Length: 113
Image (cartoon, rainbow, N blue to C red; front, side, top):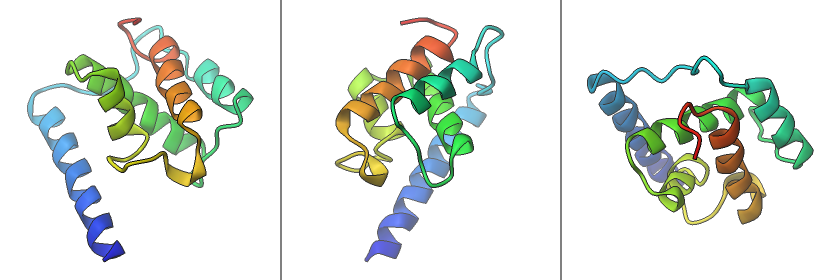
C-alpha cells in the first residue's frame, strides 16, 4: 500500500514537471534570487530534511513555479511541502511548512508576493 502511494506521488510529481516543461516554462533561479538567504532562514527556523539543502531548494523552486501558475498559497504549500499529503513531511510543523513557502517567496521567487 505504501509503495502504491509513493508511486502515485512520484507519478504526480513527474506529470507536474512534464506539464511545466511542455508549457515552455523553465524553472530557474531569477537573477535576484538569494538561495543563501533562503537556506539560512530555513536553518534559523530549525527546518531540515533527510536530503538536506538540495531538497529544500527543490521545494523552494517548486513554490515559485506553482505561484507563477496562479496556484493559491495553501495549495502551493500542500503540493510543494506536504507532497500532496494531509500534513507536512518529516514531522515538520504546519508553521515550518508555511515558513518554507514564505521564505521561498521572499528570497527566491522573482515576483515578490
